[in-house]
Image (tube, rainbow, N blue to C red):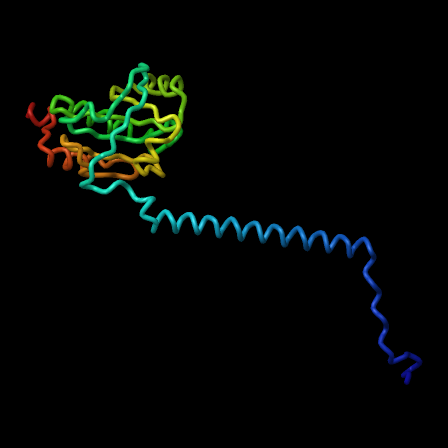
Amino acid sequence: MTTSGVSSSPTPARPFPLWLRVLLIILGLALGGMLGSGAMVLWHAHQTRSATQSDPAYAALPVGSTAPDFTLTGLDGQPVRLSAYRGHVVLVNFWSSGCPPCVAEMPTLESLLTRYRDAGLVVLGVNQLEPADQVRVFVQQHGLHWVTALDQDGTVSRQWRVYAIPRSYLIAPDGRIVQTWLGALDPTAVDRALQALGLTPHDANAS
């Protein structure tokens, strides 16, 4: 049937050119791959975050437990053994020169050492995975005076469950862990913990 000379039959759709169909297929495959990869990345990040938050293996060493002993090499090439400081209060700090929060807390660590050294505090900095020469230059440039040990293969960090830095442990004279902190240290909190162990800062004696 026609009206005004125009056929009422539908006009067949013109097929897309072959090159356009190929292009659309390629774009579809690429987009699908990107979405799939993105989903995998998000899933992996979620799984890692969930494990870190809930898996006991990622938790710090428990307060009240005995700190695992270790022997590492110091900047002078001599062995640094944790148990050699038994009888002292030891603040063990895991750090790296490429970690901004670690660098930010260096003045706090240096101040704690200055104020409590005469009371018997030992600050033992465990550097993670950096070459000795690099660490030596960093220590000299920042005027750091605590004991530095090199955990160049990460063995001690894993043993101490250090999966993020800075991580600090406060060790009592008998070798027990009495406190742990993740992130830059709060000087007031560390002061309280040290004084609870019977240490008196030299500036308190001066006053």
